[in-house]
Structure formats: C-alpha cells, structure tokens
Image (cartoon, rainbow over all chains, first blue to last red; front, side):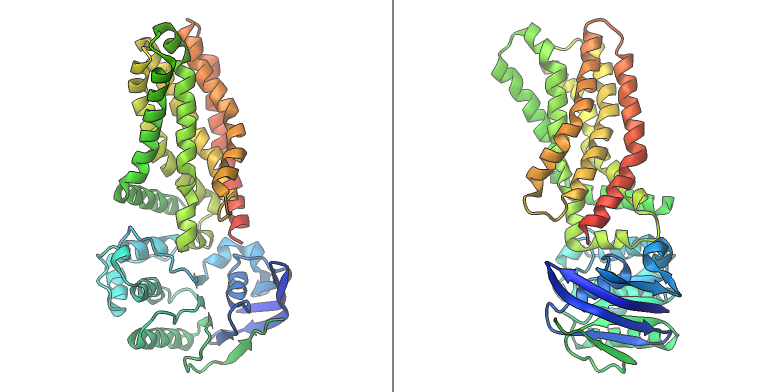
Length: 203
Length: 222
C-alpha cells in the first residue's frame, strides 16, 4: 500500500534520519516511536506529502506520491500535531468542512453521530472546549474516514483521557481489521498489537 | 472542485461574521487615514479636490495591506491549512476562494464607502462612479498580489514588515492606474483607458496569482 525508500530528513542543518525504508501493506499497523525531536512528526509529514524528503521517495502502489498529489490525498487522512479545528466554528461545522475538503461525502446525522461517539454535543463553539475535547473533535473525523485506506496520525493519544484512548484504540483496530493501514506516532506504547514498529533514533 | 471553493468561501465568511472586529479594523483604518488628510492639509477646496483620488487610493492600499497578514496566518497556526494542502481539490482553487472571501470582507466595503469619503474632499459627484469602479477593479488585484506575499512570508518572524516591502512595490501599477482614472475623469477626459488596463490587470492576476499562492503555500508550510 505504501512504500518508503531511503528517506532522509534534514532540519536546521541536522540530519534527523537517513536511509529509512519500510513497506506497509493492507491491514498493517506501524508505530513510529522515538525521543522528542527525533523526527516523528517530520516522518509523518513526509509520508503524507507535506514535506519533501532530502533524499529517497515515498511511493503508493509504485507511484511516487509527489506525482500523485490530489490522487494520493483521496486515499489518506492525516491528523497532525495541531488539531486543525477552528476556534470560532462549532465542532459540527469543523467536521463538516474537514470532510468536504477531504472529498468524503457525509450527511449531517453521521457527523453528529461521530461527535457523540467521542462524547461531544457538536453545537458548542470549539473555543469553549478543553484541550482534550478539541483533540476529540479532530479525531471524530476518523469515524467518517473508513473509506480512506491509509491513516496517518501524529500523536493521536495526547491529551485524551482513558475513555478517549479506548475509543481511539477501537477505531484504529477496526480500521486495521477491515484491511486499512494505520501509521501513528507516540512516545509510549498504548499496547496495540502492531505488525511492525519503526524506531527512530537521532543521528 | 467548486464544492471545495464554496466550502472555503462560506467558512471564511462565517469566521469573519463571528469575529467582526477584524473586518471593522481594516475599514476603520481606511476611513480614519482618509479623514486625517483634510485635517492636515487644510480646507482649501481646490487642493482637496486635486489630492482626493490619490489619497483615497493610498488609503485603500494601506488598508488592504493591513488585513493581509491574517489571510493565511490563522489557518497556518491551527493546522487547518495543512488540511487544505492535503485536500482533494487543487490548492489553486482553494487559494482563489480564500482571496475572494478576503476581498469580499476587506475590499468590497472600501468600494462602497469610498464615495462617502470623497464627500469630505468635495469631489464632484460625477466622479463617484469612476472612483467606485476603479476601486472595484483595483482592490481584487491588491488582494490577489498581496496574498502571494502573505503566503511567502507565512510563519516568518517579522513577516509583517517583509510583507510590506515585498508587496507595496507591486501595488504601484494598480495605484497609478486607479488614481489616474479618476484624475482623467476630473480633467474631463475619458477614464476608459486606465479602467481597461485595470481590468486587464485583474484578469491577469485572477488567472495566475492563485497558482503562485498555492506554490508559495506549499513552500512555506514545509
């Protein structure tokens, strides 16, 4: 499904990693672990195409993602470090906009349903929510992202309480179960059965 | 594709309505700057009539500049810009939609209020139409060119100053033709030439700027 070959990342004249290669198939889970500043976020940004690697390439079904661009975007969901929700919009409006930009067709009920599963009502403006609730508002998109085969999640477990962690784990495991692939980064192992673990070590 | 553009336009309009102070700042700035000149120059009607087009145009230019910084900065800070970069529709379309909304809330109000400002300068009423038309054609060009600068300086420290240095020289042709058209009309000549050049600039900018903005956004979000 996704293949990385010889990835090298340089930030501020420092080589974060070099010669990183792996392949990810359907139904596989990849955990990116490593210390702060080891390049977990950079790796995920390279994998979704936001950042170009210094060397190497990321390929989907053999085609480099830089060439695929919007075609590649149609198959992935990337949830970054920032929750990507607007303070002055409600959780519901945020989710509807995110889905429309991602080309996922959803109806209002399923949006409300997705937010409810994460314990959010949806009508309140995001600026009134706590940090953890914002994270939930962003993660609720995953309930509606089943048709997108590849999920790239940057530190999805931060700021979540135990119930939120359990919900997210269930979501990820269900996606793996239906033949999707998930790449996520975290410092601590949440105890999911991962097919493969990439450890990033600072050079 | 049009769906994404519509989404962005309604989103940004809604955001602007929920935070009206941002919109009001640029408009008030325009009104205050344009109103300060008669106070400073003195109440000599002939002089005021002569400087009116230039002053109003410079005020519009600075006011458009003022609101540019926020065009992409907020989306960059909260991560929504990344989601636009990873969207399924071409980034140029999204950039065009964002610039269009920016113009709707910061450029269009200037066009509407300009005749009122012109009143302070005792500009003949026959020139109001030319003034408004020149602003209607010119302010979208300002938004389009300015957005390229805003995208390039995104996330830079001291980006605001750099943005002015980068964009203001590019505003010069618009200023010359915009103010020039009103001057022509005031002299009893036809302003058509200048207005057509402005329209040509608008067409050119509307066709190419969105793609330049898209490229700049990709560079500065790396």
